[in-house]
Amino acid sequence: MTDRKDMHDAYRHRNLQRMGRELALPAEPDAQREERWKLRRPPASQTGPSRTVRFVQRHKPMALLTGGAAAAAVTFAVWLGVGGSTPVSAATILHHFKTALTEAVTIRIEGVDLGNVTIDGEIILDRATGEPNEKTDTFYSELHVVLKADNPDWNDLDGAIVVCQSPTQAWVYCRGNGGSGGGLFAPRRVRPTEYLAKGTNWPEFVKDPLGHFGAMPLQLTFYSWNSRVRYRFLAPQRAYVRQLLHFLLDLSSAETVEGLIAELQAAAGRTSVTRVDETTWVLHASNFGRIGSLEPPQPKMPDVEALLKDVVWELNYDVHSRSIVGWSTTGGGTAELSELGIGVDQVKLSELDLPTESADALIKYFEDTARKVEVDRSSWLGRWKIRVTGYPLPLETSGRDWAVEIMPKLMRGMELSVYFDAEAGTVRRAEFRNIASPGSRITLELGQVKLDPARLEPDRWVTEYTTIYESSKNP
Image 1 (cartoon, rainbow, N blue to C red):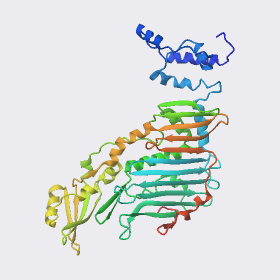
Image 2: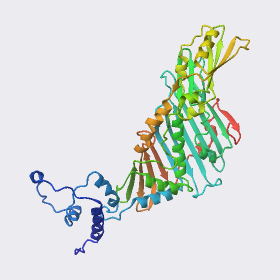
Image 3: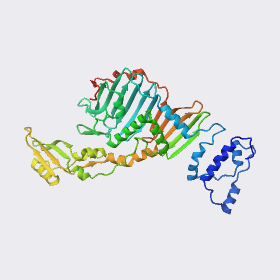
Image 4: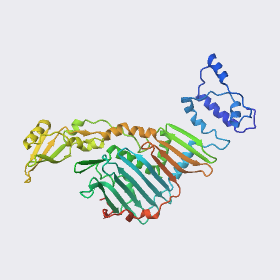
């Protein structure tokens, strides 16, 4: 090290030594390969070498990095700098990211498509300080959950959950936790139920972001003459959306952000830092495993036969029309199956070829196939209740299949980009991409928020169909 003209040489030489200890040189080339290299060597440039080329020529020639060798060099590469400017490390960017998250934050959720459900929305945390203060802070969340009809002749079910808490307002609006058919004047159309609950508070939303929407059944089915439509929000999908919202809320909380940033740093399988202009550096992280509450489940196939042995299938048999006019399934292991994304397949159940030509024939069939059969003949309308326990009901496993096949891919495809202004020493934007589906994006705008005061007024959501509750409790 006799050349003192370039003061950065000492740092470069030190880092090259570190890289050399991590990397191994490739095998010596044979004579044929050397000859091919000589034949393909381009003519020497007539112009003077650039700064980058001069840096390489001053030291021992390096082999090209490939495969695992290139990955091992990433940690050192973030310290080499570009064009002589001060380099920025991943740890520096994450430190400023953590600080900015405890200030005002706007979280935009776009393009989360789970197949049968799409989710978009915005969460706004307008905080005066890092600690929540109901007298000065405004918290607002607006989530749109669209349940797709499985029959194109019917409308999609447009759901929404809006939560507001400001120094002067506290309310929740929910649309889509149920619905009703349009009747004769609007066939093949479902109108979602909706309500407005005044007096609720933000901690309820933080505890369960889908709490107000949770009353919606995992499956809604409607009929109009000979047409049927079904809407589904599978249990594993709802669990994942809850985890995602909890993760975002925890990430923007002063109490939990430090631990989550540490987990982000440790959980990323790949990280790099690049410079995009004179002042902006970007941290890229991907190939994540578990991060806080965001964790792909590992569902196991339960003992379905054991869970079904106590499930009760109750049918209403009309002795006059000699037909089944309704049924329901309750008890037993239905709750356990539902949590695993497994449920009774109502379509296949309606298509069963049952001996309905007489009540006796139907009862005899169930006595031969079920564990227990009870009959209530007391109805004066001629409708007998037949309770069947332990019948081998047909099951629908799409929820579990989604959890097993799709969810593990979600975390592996997630990418995080954090944009750092080195001149100002601040992080003002971060993006999660592919966090819930290919093309989905969650943007975190950090710093001063822009919230239209009109959005804080609950009356803008009220229609003639809205039920209003003047209570601090959920309806």
